[in-house]
Image 1 (spheres, helix red, strand yellow):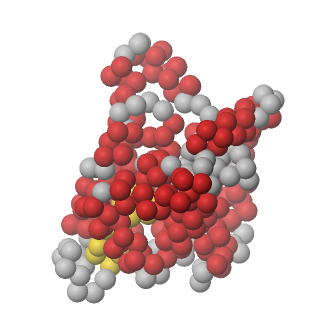
Image 2: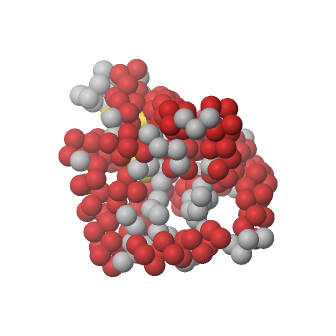
Image 3: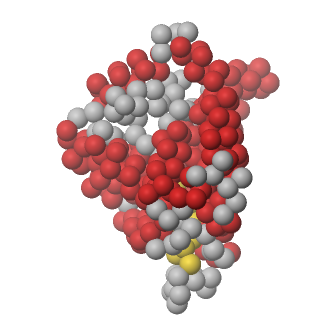
Length: 283
């Protein structure tokens, strides 16, 4: 992120508009990626439009994409990974692990927390009917690619007393509490709002019944429990909850394409358990 800020300042000078242009573009990319994921899940044009509009009108996302920080780009990388995973599930092409590893590696350079999404997806695949994808020889290659891409960041931390670990411990001591853990899941409904909650909850149920989307739904539920157990912030969790696509169902009244918008979690909270001390990029 400091490198991006320096690049903007070097090319456009100290301009607030320039500094906010890149996160705005990231927001547009997230909306497009949402529609593309909807298409991968079988949604037609109307369903893709509904999913994109749900992402574009999210208050949390709108607030995030006006400020240059790591978070707007984090949303984009999570969406790219989700899109690639859905495509791999739909096509069975395990070579996509290479693209997932590449996208994940670049995302890890921005924020290390995208690694939680990758881990949750692998666990969900191993626990479900898609174990063949976990046994693929391309998975370790993709993991190695991601590790190679993020290695400069890890080397920097290793030579600077693991600054990210210190930052995460500080955040956890400030924010993690029993109250956050107890209210985390109920607070999701408040943060999402009643209108989008209908899409979110109904879509999650459809996703669980969708062969191509079920691993993502299981990954979402696993992360939801993890974040609640670690005392995460509800508003930070929803900052990465985006309409990830459309699940086709027979005789659906939502759209003529017989699809319903679904929401998939693509983030975590700012406060992690000690097991993931460096999961958030401090910059």
